[in-house]
Length: 101
Image (cartoon, rainbow, N blue to C red; front, side):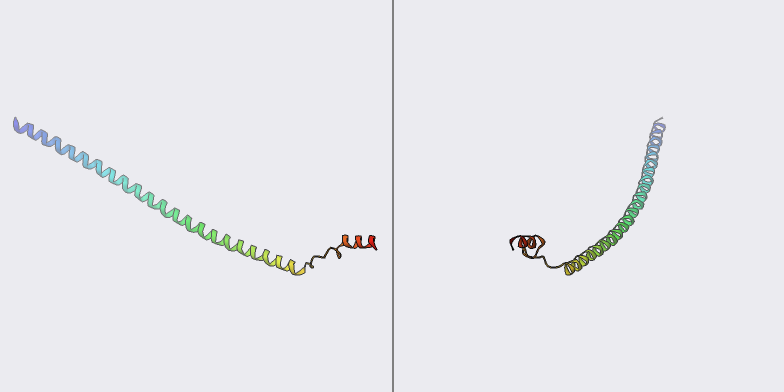
């Protein structure tokens, strides 16, 4: 009788160990799956980041080009625009000069 009780306890203990092992194995596979998905997501996000960096660099280059063209245009306009007239040479100055003279 004693041996049967000990054998039953041993069987119960082995069953608990096997159940726990199977549970840990399922958890391990679940974690492996989660890790794989996380790594895929990280790789995808890194790829998106590189794409955005390239786009930002292109936009920066194009904006710099536009700013350069605007500055060039402004410089050309400054070269073409005549010097501001003094008060006597302006249209108002001429009108006042005519009234006085």
